[in-house]
Image 1: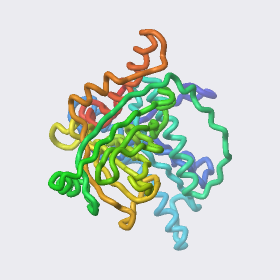
Image 2 (image 1 turned 180 degrees about the horizontal axis):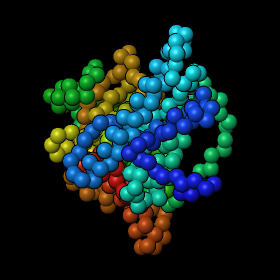
Image 3 (image 1 turned 30 degrees about the vertical axis):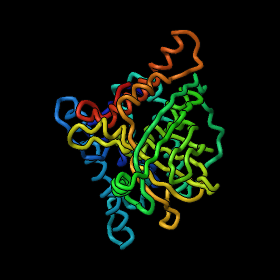
Length: 350
């Protein structure tokens, strides 16, 4: 790039953050937004090695400059000669971006990465006690609605905090639990862009030990919720209902997606680890006093096939319905690629 008679080059193998130049120009309070991956997971192959080499070069130089700034600040505090001769305040916002910065073919993924970045930046500013204006952030058009049904079955046990133990004990005792869910996505485009990918859940919890068929009063599903690691994801269900005698109960279930050794994509996406607690809560922190029990539910292959037949949308005509299916498929398969396709690319291009 040429500007004001000077040529500017992207010196990616030299530095991704030229802090020395900022300091030389008089900056003594520097904000750095660092999105270069620092996970340290190395994959084989030319493409992976090429981008990982760039990441290591960038991270290595950045850490060395940060160390120089810290040493200089310490020398100033101790009254010794310092490299930069004045105290430099360095504020670093670190967050990995779940988007390949060259190979990207999806507008939804780009918009979702921006939304996630805005959310994490505002959270970081709050942690740093940096005041922010309450801006009216424009929401995208929601897009077409989409609904589908889902059924999961399994076992749970009262008094157990470990879902694995609860499921085994429940299987022995015959304490089964079934979820019959209707999942509603009010707007597919907004859903795909939302970092939490939130859908509304209605339906029933069926468990004789809790009182039979119990209507879900309020529920949500976060499909592939980001947890800060682009190489993993969580499918999280939070369901509010009442037991047979009217006590408030919260069901929290999670499908934990991570590319462990072996073929685990099917088990990860069909296994729901669940906990049941007293009261209605967000389920983020369940105390031992509130915990009622835990277990594991699963969705079978025939149930998955039936689930595909229940998909409904308000899109009109074959073209509209095809657009909805394609958009949701890109989102769903793309997020699976993010977790299980790391050996090919760091994130899905779709």
